[in-house]
Length: 206
Ligand SMILES: [Zn+2]
Image (cartoon, rainbow, N blue to C red; front, side, top):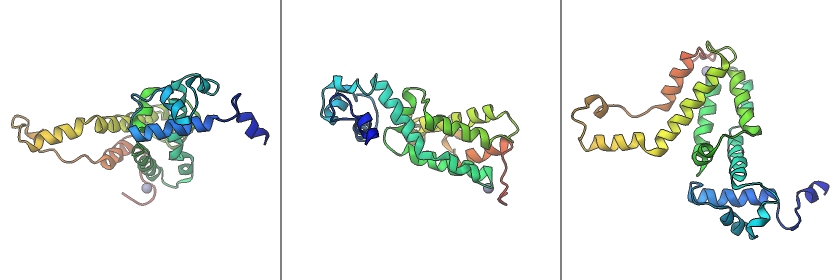
């Protein structure tokens, strides 16, 4: 009861989670935080814009907390008990790809650095899983995140699909290797990175 009351603001009819849920609904509907204003969130909650400032100092803070919430979908800590670290990373990448299918996720991650509990838990887990890599865990962490974030950005922004489309129109006669390139295989890319930094399968897969 005390907890419930502590979350109630001066208006007594809204709370932090209601605001986050409203922001999340708008974000999922639009697929991007472009054009979603604090005022739109206030309208979705059913209060005046000023009422939100009791709970969040800025719109950026709402997006930050929603971004950290998305990262919470990964549950990376579950992978610490995996017997094979290579397989643990394949599972983490799978979960991350599922997280990216929730509309607005890349938009949230791109908006600002996410420095919340779930973000730190993800980093903590990656550092633990790369403790025995042949590069410093910090560098393994940055390499893996850069690969994933970069890959997702390239896909979302259409770099890969746009070239693939041109390829089908036969406009790449001067670039035969681009024209004949294969479909992307993210699993193969991750497998190569993991092997490259010395994280081999210990589960029997070769
Ligand atoms: Zn394995």
